[in-house]
Image (cartoon, rainbow, N blue to C red):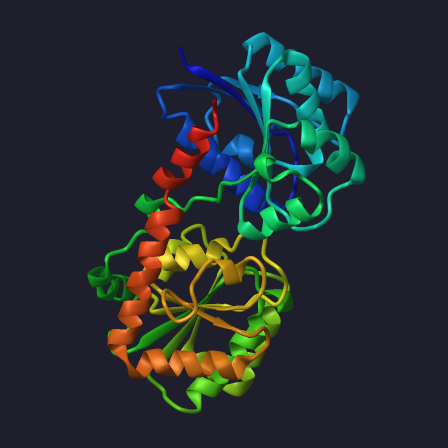
Length: 360
């Protein structure tokens, strides 16, 4: 008999991010597993609603935790389908999801994506009575344990990066450079993500400036958007560095730029609950250089499958980039080691295997 799962993501977030992408990825993957009968409780016309099938879908809207109409509907759905497990994927829905499980007899699994403190009520009464709390990273798990959750309640189940979309043979990088009109003689260094100070855009520009003072065979890809983007464009034009930059802006296909890239810089100054961009870089065989912040520092072994630099220490980043540029074999070794780390920990198969092992 198939296990019946109810996946809950009823948030109507107008600015969807990693949590919503995580829901879409997991829903699509679980719907292809024969042993799983997946149902969905999704906010109507939300990002998750638009990017998932309408099969076995119920529209539920929780405008706030314990919202009476939405919570009641969630309980009725869980009872109707006789769910074995209910999966909650948003911190603002934990209590309602928990109640739906308790009142329907289903086991509840709650994904924890963020690092910020949870409400005391949730920590004291909800999480300890939940079947499992699934932290997406070691950093997230550490915060849960510090909040007092028992070790046996917390499992790390990271985000997965679809290998069909991202995994790239080293030999195909020249083909992707040609596809994007990039000269084969250029080494490509990439920034991917929100164009914001906290994400390290100005550190990236500072690193680029230092490197371009030493060599000109470089192209810097800036893939992403944000309110700092126009300011960055203006600075590039004013300084003349625009000749060495390709500003892509917003894209639905970040993978094709990573596939043409040699080195990915992930210079977030603030904590990251997971570090998806860094893992995407490893999947596309980039040599990844990142800052020593949670959870980024947990993703690579410094000097083995990537490099970890002190936050804000752009000189250290420049040193590592030059090391790689001057030693092509070292660049490939780091990129290949990062790819192996990705294949071991972050593929769809690896993550789903861990997730499914908990459904007992």
